[in-house]
Image (tube, helix red, strand yellow):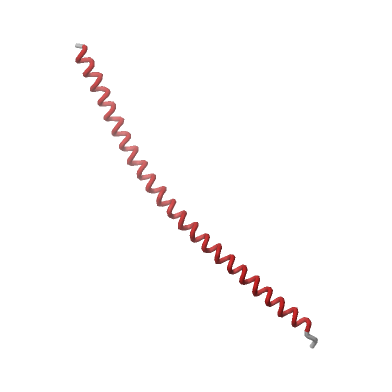
Length: 85
């Protein structure tokens, strides 16, 4: 009778192990899906950051160009002020 009892406990543990394994496989599948989603979002964020850097560089270039034009115009206006009409 002890052998039967041991087999029953073994079967119960095996059944429980199979159930846990099934749950872990489901969780693994779910987590893999989440990882794929997060990787896609991460790639989108990286591309957005790259675009932002490009826009920032263009902005800085435009500011520098504007400052140069402003300086040249100011120089022309100063020279015109010096001319007596």
